Image (cartoon, rainbow, N blue to C red):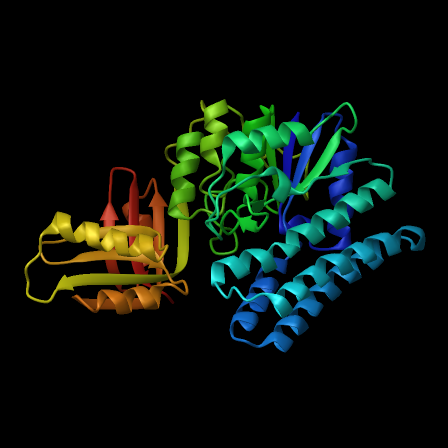
Length: 420
């Protein structure tokens, strides 16, 4: 059995869904297919969440209807009249449930509301793809990840209950009845029957969980690039394909912010020694990249990773007294409380500086630090990581920019700079 994961870019249009079917027609293996929300649906539904929590219910519902219209247009392009009404009715059900939540929910916690609303994107996309495949003679079973992937109640960053999820997955998959199962990435469910999500871009992690729990032969992530590149082609020129990457290297690159895979993806695959292939859905026959235990990254090839929208927060004692270990504990407990992840940290005799993503939680955290410390911060920065750096590459990407913080090891340099 193999696991395939298709991201939002691969199913953003009717033509994208048809291309997915062309890939599947060449496969004879038992498959579990994990599918993300279509196109930019998650971004669109995040706007619904923001409007709802700003108590603008009419605006939230209006934005929700826009998302439904986008899916309706894809359905009308995919299905003939005899099959269209069934999936349109299903789409109505999905969006009506979300509208009912907006109208009746009284639990106005951002993370909880986010998971209940944004998850509609994955439910819609998988329902459309599953129905379309059945309509053209590729039989499959639609499986609700909320019933299979059991998690705790840490909304927006749920932790997997692996033992229970394994039992549920084993009960759900029966390849003697069907060779293809379609399910959602990114989402799961807690014991109370509430929807949870696994973190932004968490569909890769979903695929890895399913592969590990079912002892799959491999996982393939289908993307709009030829495989894992040494830089994001939307930002850097002359990118090169990395044909093979080790688990360790992939984990490090994803930690630094590489848009390869979700950072949590590697561990369950490494535990079961399951190879991960990253291939192009545009050119499915091309080589792609394999991530596995014995792969070695070409040591001389530089890898560039750029994280934008960064904030540098420097925390200083008001009286110049600084017990470093004690203050580090205070700082990290505060960041943990606000669910902020640190991308870079640097300390001195009188200060601790951290670089973090600029999320909705950052400003409240800064204000809370200000109760006990002097705090300085800079926003709109970018964090550039260069693996296998040279002096020439450092000079090239820092020229004319103010560097606020840099850290260098034998193979890697990280530069926090002004964004231009």
